[in-house]
Amino acid sequence: MSNPATSPMTQARHREMAIEHLLFGTIRFLVHRHPELLTELNDSLDHLWDKAGDETRDDEAVREIARRFLKSLGAET
Image 1: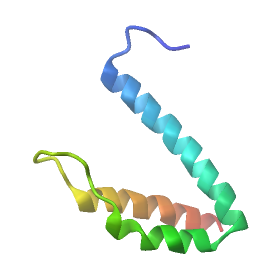
Image 2: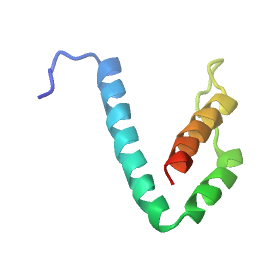
Image 3: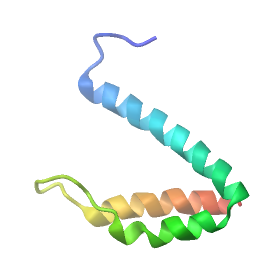
Image 4: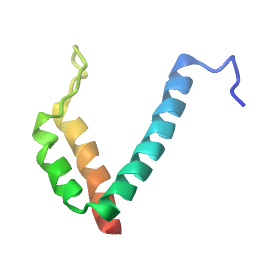
């Protein structure tokens, strides 16, 4: 049960963790049936970018997180 006094930053972290779990499970499910999906996703990373509009923007950091995510999926197949 969610605590209404939880900070917006904590709530955002919880959402991020939940979404990552669900997305990872969905992609894992699809990759087992369509292994070529990993190649397609890897090939799409050049188009991934950080939407921050300030000095924290780091496109390559976002791509590296995606690469690690995909690498862990590849290790399971």
